[in-house]
Length: 269
Ligand code: BV8
Image 1 (cartoon, helix red, strand yellow):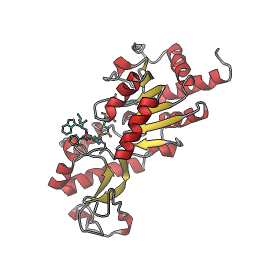
Image 2 (cartoon, protein in one colour):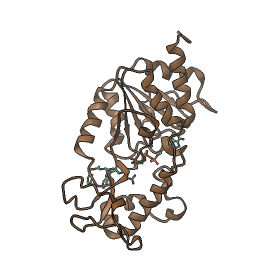
Image 3 (tube, helix red, strand yellow):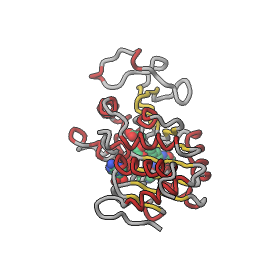
Image 4 (cartoon, protein in one colour):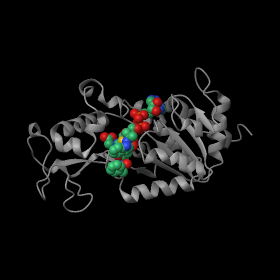
């Protein structure tokens, strides 16, 4: 049963109810998407095509086919996103998620984001299921999957596109999971095991579209987990949510953590 958001923000009663649900958790899984990084100035995945990239289809850029077709275009798109991410700091939403660990026995963050901001914010157990934009690997994975490559040690003509693998000469690519690529088996196995074991899943800032991650809230729900969703907009996950808090992560999450802390000190029975 979801509780449609109140007009103009989330009511204190519903913030407290979500905090109560979190307080009861023994194994909280926080599932995040691009929306949690929006208030850090990083466009969400689909927004990522603002301006310079408006004319390209992201699903074509973030695929092996797209890279093979135009390695320089795809490489430059990631270089552009890397500059945005390098300037970004964790926002109050990331910091609130990290603060949950001070109030709850077990918190694991499964993130679709490749920006590393949850770790920077202080979350201690983060599973970046779609990889890390700051890392690069050989397109051929010539030394095993993944064959990471430190491009800071390489010299190449940036005008000619991506650098070449020092081992085999294949192109270097971002160490992220593209569409039509399977998630790393260990990451995928852990994510599904966590979703099955969670007694509460907090879903923040994801459109719930991209598989297989989008199935995790449904799996958690099937296994009896309480689902809390924070998003300014409704998503396919909202109908599952026991609590839907319709607002930006950077505003709502600090309110929930404050309520959690307050109740923890006996503020509200
Ligand atoms: C796989 C890394 C098996 C790269 C990403 C047909 C052919 C081939 C494949 C498929 C197909 N049909 C379906 C598939 C499967 C495909 C898929 O799901 N496609 C979708 C488009 C239907 N999935 C895959 O390919 C996956 N692999 O299935 O392997 C396989 C193998 C071969 C062939 C077939 C299947 C791999 C998927 C991983 C792709 N990599 N990222 C990169 O980032 O460059 S996906 C990328 O997009 C993100 O990581 C994320 O997962 C996704 C974007 O989703 P969100 O994070 O939710 O972001 P979005 O912009 O959508 O939404 C933002 C949300 O935030 C909104 O709800 C908004 O309201 C909210 N918001 C905004 N502001 C705020 C906010 N919330 C809170 N606070 C705010 N302030």
